[in-house]
Image (tube, rainbow, N blue to C red; front, side):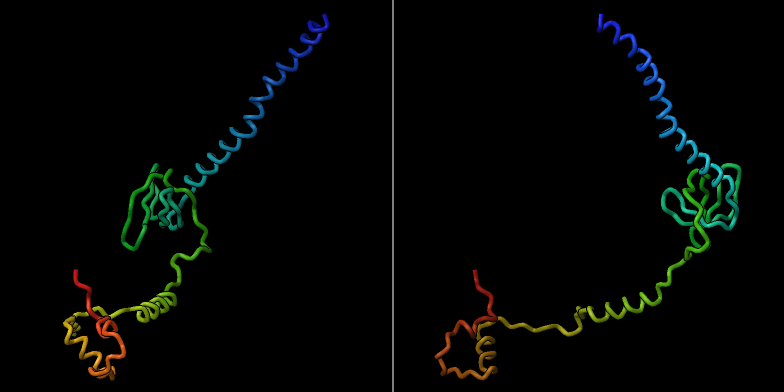
Length: 164
């Protein structure tokens, strides 16, 4: 009997829980998403020529003209492309710089490239003689005498390639 009495009161709680879950989902998921969608639609419909925009593909462009469902965007000087309005993700503010000041960076980059540059031109061929006589001549130029055999010959032959 006690079990039957306690189960009767839980039916109202279950019904209240069943009604509360959709209300929570509405306020946490559906309502914010529809609000964002409305803001996006208003932004897309309020675009005017001359506005700077960012497309969903990441292209920064300037609006040239607006049609019913499309836009004509200039992505570079003299390059105009047709987009649908839904392809515009956001309208950029005017305080963002259109082009970055890279002139100072370019000068520093060129100076670094000149310092790291290696001359690989083939104007002056490097002559390498790997014969045994050339190794002995190099040893003579270093100030060693041929009669001085106190040092091993392996040092004089260090420039040679080992043969297989």
